Length: 456
Image (tube, rainbow, N blue to C red; front, side):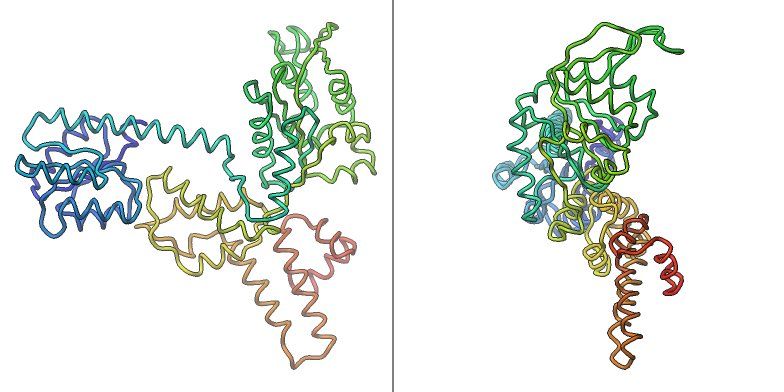
């Protein structure tokens, strides 16, 4: 942890002492705030996160022991070092029993205090590094769930991880397919070896082929050295190919051969290379539909789909939305050294009721935005993206109008139809094909209805 990322609050009713301590600690690279008593400290802690509070034990209004009790009662992730005079050491020791990190006697060599600060900084750095590692293993989107369908999928994933069978992960963008793939690798017997991943849709065919198979020096213009591809790099480990549905038919044939034979050729070479990898693929495409129109090979599909795991979209697991909201609030408050103390009720309602067409990734981005824009620990509805507010209110308004009991049956049918289409547009705002497919009508008819109901 860099010193500039280590925030200290000095609390002492002796202003000169506070100023000197701030000057020295700031000179050592720490970020330092000061205040004159425990009550002022609580007010600062309510608005901002501090790694450490250095507080005098004896102060007016609220003393150091009371401040310590308040910090522990509120479960703030803040350590406390007590400053004490010679006559109050017994009380300082008692404070340590109550949860203080340590105590330092005033008037002694200040290096003693600075050494305690360094020890605490290093300890918290190790704690945070471990938390980051755990987060990477568990995934930024969490893998816990209250949803029965999701839990069943995770149980299947954990069992499948013990084998070397090829796994295909299906799910919409933003559902966490790459996180699940990483989880499977960590639960497998290959966890000590490489986990190599590549988004196949993000690269052109020629670059993708070179990334996967590697190339020899001089294999093509610009190939000034030999390059090891991901098939070789994942030898003994796991190869994760995301968005496999975006691979060209021509390259699919080469993929199939490599997967079947566990043997590849670098571009520009006729020497076969044996590779031992566990394959996990993922896509948001409807591969069976792609197989039907010839854009995805049947034999490749059956080769990669020994085990199929389907990630449900977030709208089908609404019971998990509060979990994610709290998880990401905690994550970004910690990362940004902010403390959120007040969230408008309308924000909570809108977050809980939104359908998240971008799934967990969209929710994650929204929460990050809210924490970034928060001021004085407050989050207001004005900080929400306009889509979150607009889409829900439009759907609710239309649904409310549909319940008018003074209109004709024809008018009522029209309002219900409008409400249903509005809800689908909220769920799939960028996928008119999906909306038309669910409604079982053509895109042209859908467009006509959008114009008719003034939904576009």
